[in-house]
Length: 361
Image (cartoon, rainbow, N blue to C red; front, side, top):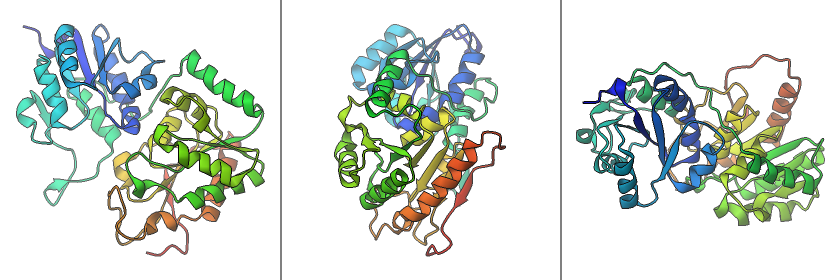
């Protein structure tokens, strides 16, 4: 009977959120080192496929979009170990019904009885789950199988096709030799994480007037928002991705080229960090501890407010945590952060959290 150390087929259930999928790449690196001869199958939502197209983390992919077809594919793959990065009961049932022998994951969502290796959440407060960096939580699952601690360096690799799409964007707008800043004010999680539209417009205008080109990033559901920013700014240096055939591969290749990304706490933030680009993140309702990346070139901006961090998808009040991050303040911090990393010789600083001096607490 096969033991953990002898396993030759491993399934990794990838998180559904883009940022979380990127944050599990250190754990994937450790898994490959721990089981160098094993066939590793990625089980993931189809929209995440471009994230992993250029790397060697997986030998095969199974789409988890449809429950029963995924079960059939898992059974055909004869998987021995299933590593469950998502904490849902659905994922555990999928692995169990897919005939995976060893199930490794956190004891969450009433699924502990399904797991052969059930881990408790590593942080607790007053008897409840406390914020803990997801990147470290993912690492612990692989370390449970004997893997080495992989650290926190996230990595992504683009494909030639993805690079060609980004190159077409750069050529169309004449951006070679230009300082391009990425701007993303949306968030798939919910409106509470979004930066106000008028603020995005004003920041893009300030950056363009300072001589920067601005690429307004968007996902398929954010096209109207991004297009409206470009139209409202009405400056030749400010362009949006809404005209393109949008997918994560294009987003990756574009973010690899920017001098700085200014973003909400959303997937592009993690992608840019994986390419070691400077990142300035606008945090609102999020407790930073959950999504901390430990990326030296990342600067966090957050307003301390009595109602936050609330973790809500929609603000029931006046969205003060994001409204008090004004365009002028963000612009000043962006210019300082750009200047720091354009010097290249400077030593990395730890992640810092900065808020305006006049922020209401």
